[in-house]
Image 1 (cartoon, rainbow, N blue to C red):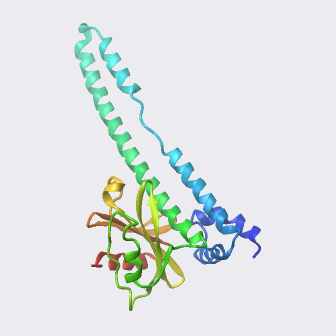
Image 2 (image 1 turned 135 degrees about the horizontal axis):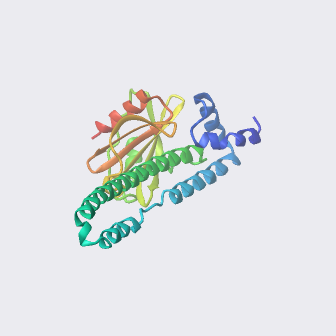
Image 3 (image 1 turned 90 degrees about the horizontal axis):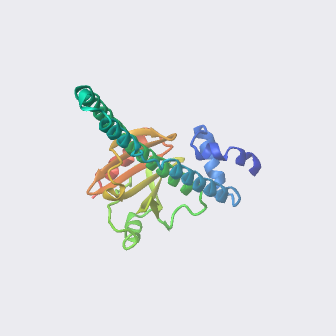
Length: 248
């Protein structure tokens, strides 16, 4: 298929909205195409920039000033009514602030999910998916020493359907972490590991969920946040997550 036909579907591929068969065909093409690979990476970077800018929202303090001004202008004659209104407005203010906080938290969590998805897609679209290429965990794990500020254990995947492809350094926001890639049949699954405190508690544990057209599992263990993501079935995602949970 000519590259111009692939490029017409590039944005749909990056959003993870292609059928599974086309996703696998697209991944194979992008890995080997010197034209489509950099184009895919550039579009992922643009998407991430737009997401970050679009999520920058802080509730204004004007609402609080308006409530205080309203209370101050009321006469003593209407004190009881003013107090009632003030109490009601205070409840509304607390509710508004709580809703704003929860909305901001949900926004940060959704942004992190989107960034993780972009990191996964960008790696698969890159001609050099990993920096250390090895199926031996005793080779891959030591490679990260001194490159990230924490250590982790890798599971034994012999006699399983998974095989280790390799690993690379990655960043979620300003937090450095490990990005490991595993093959499962025709699928490639990313495993991300970050320090939990660096992500400020915005991730919640999940044994399996659908996020941005990819299946995902995430949990915290030993102060580290693990995220397993890919277009493989939830059973495969869950099985690889189980191997990591039992590692070490």
